[in-house]
Length: 312
Image 1 (cartoon, one colour):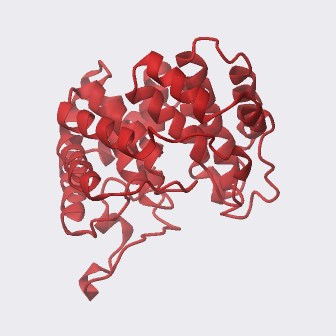
Image 2 (cartoon, helix red, strand yellow):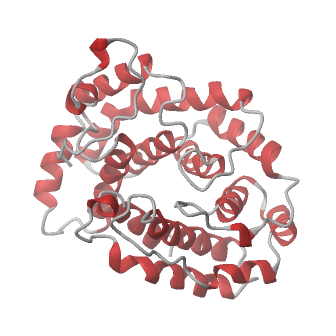
């Protein structure tokens, strides 16, 4: 949580004053390899504390959360967003920040309420960025990495639903339908590329299951992904080198496939019996490798594993 280096800042330097230490730039979310991984690392620990409040490290986790998620530190994160490039962390980091805020909002815990109050302004800034950006984004980004539109909208929709932000929720639903409602026959066999950690096809289906009425979604899903195409996910992606920072993305792909497949199994209500077994196959292929000696994967994969397990 507070491991400042190594660190990938991924920022545009407008002046020499912008070249500062990670902790100076990001007083809340500096303690990981990059900003978004720090954000979803915090989400993961909060999720674990909610489920297992007596976990051995609970007191230490709470102490560090209290240190990092202070009002002063989160005001520093707001200040960074206000001067950063409009595309900074769009939309992957945005999505995880809203997922973190959602997790705090839905936790009936005295400390969590303080942390939510502290992060609320930052969440509002990010929600505002979605609302400003989505009308101008004419085409969806269908890559299997950070800018994937469907993933970014799914988590933002969860947040908007939880906190009752109807402006954001309605905007996401409109744009999701604009981008994806006419899609058919998703080319599952084109997946994965060599550095994917998200499935373009499954993330899209995962989003549409959120924004469409059940009956409409089931009809859309039949046209989008045939049973024969779906069989592609019966085998997990092979991860040939977990010390390589791009190849290890494929462990994340297996875990994110799992969370999509678990969710789709629920919303299709048993119409596709193989979905759950495919989810288990992908989950189990990478679950043993979320905490290896290789920082390239260990700084982020546990968050993916916890989210996948939470969808079972």
